[in-house]
Length: 285
Length: 264
Image (cartoon, rainbow over all chains, first blue to last red; front, side, top):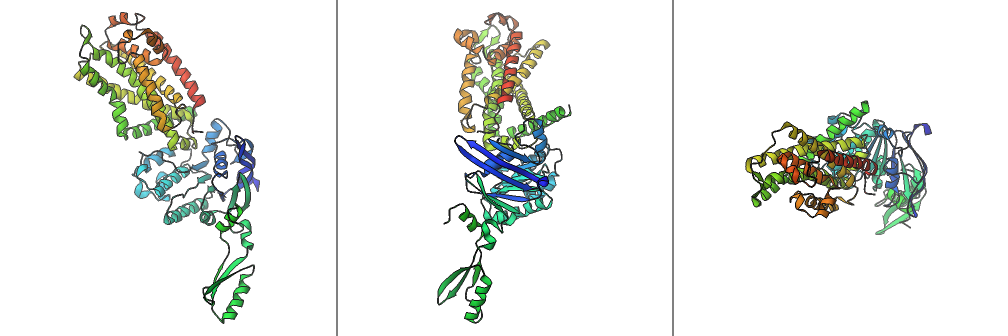
């Protein structure tokens, strides 16, 4: 299992002053996997990711990203950066350059860059190819960021809150792009505030709070979601009734018999990822 | 060797993209490339006197303008724009690519050198047309002029990169950097005849490269017998080269060691 791990983290600690921003994290991301890191602001997500990207150095612990310690100094780090792509949180650089100029310039930095035109098509910026970055909308600007993240044909892609500020449609088409990248065999580490995004994209999610990982699971099983009682609601005598049950099928059958057929306004739901997540980080009691 | 060539190639590409960005900011084009010409018009119009028979104040002033152009275009521009690149994410993004920091430095140095060539050409062109500036005819003087511009550009570039660690943010950078440059210009004899400055100013200025660049440029644009009017009674070109080299090396060592990719 560990031989295919793209990212391996053991006992990662990052201390700022007296506080541990990251407080002993263990994490393993498999090659070809989309892994989403969830957590409230200040939980240690960005610090963790930036250590993996080589922007910050760890106080303690072991980090291997594609078999390499990102804190290594010198030209070995440059070689390693050929294999990774980074999409940072919102940026405003290269404002006076066109989409094409920026992407084709960044292609020069890599040993095996992707085809510039193909990347422009993939991120859906064909119509904006000659537009200056300052003229792009928030969503288009983010697509440019992603284009710069994948131009070097990385094996591993870091996406830090990639869809913040997107409208729902832009988010959907962005997800399609990410799925395409996964189909190409890329490993993706994603941080996001959107639980639906994690649910739609991630193979596994890790919830981080106060610098520690609370749980790592698939979106379907996180926080015991698959075994959580389902909520059954219906309308009876003008009042909405609800019960929580481990066996909703039986309950619905019983209701159906009682009503002699269809149950008014029947709804069966399991807690969504967001509810589970909020419960986990202690904001919902 | 291969990596060295690659570093140089990427540096060249960086200078191209940097120049493109520079040229698209109209205010930076006007205030960097045309500023010396504008100043020459102002000073040349106000001070119509000659400082010696046949030598106008403009002739003296052009030497100072080229020298301080080196400081403005290299040191001042970089010490302001690099903190801005730190704020807008340029540096962080570059840091995440295989590009080496040397390529980034080379790109800046080539940008500064190129801008200096344009700026100086404009100044000499307008100076010759409007203010009857006498251009040197001796090839030796043009040789001196060339190495002074190249060495001055290199020195100014590395000191700008080195000083870019000082401003805390891009927005505050101009307020930190500009006064230093203006004071240095006054002390170094850019706006006034250097020997008429108080001696403490002269001695202070002698520590920094601008005084030497200005003096070197005077050796190019003033008649040779004016050397006797310098503080040392000589153009001191050897000493000038030495001072610039020392600053270049110190600046480079500092820039490589202390360059900040991000604010924290």
